[in-house]
Length: 138
Image 1 (cartoon, rainbow, N blue to C red):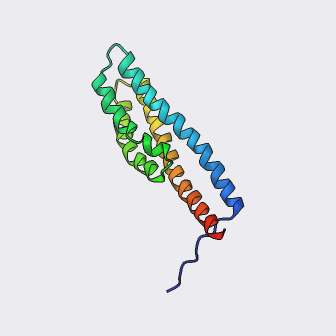
Image 2: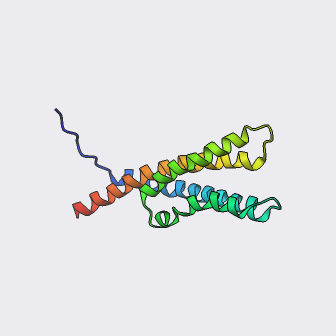
Image 3: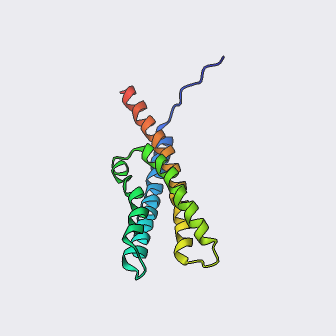
């Protein structure tokens, strides 16, 4: 059996990873905020809105805010799982005979959130590995 060589991340690679991470985090937070704002506008400000539906739509996403603030990569991984429920729900609505523009927007936002959260989780793991690697050298 051959042993795996340890992963070595160079300073140049780390700079690229960090730049990608920050850029995609901005995209993620804009999309995440837009999804929450859309739920709020559809349910609290619309004439046919419902506070109960807003709570059902928003609370599963709001639960992740502490982990997002603490920059935990596992939070982003869990968001990937949870956002699939929203994606499934919105695709069904978007493909119904009575398509509303909000349903199409939710499909787009959930796809952007899923892909960006997946990439953030991965790049954040590499970034944290690089930081541990640097602290062990010093």
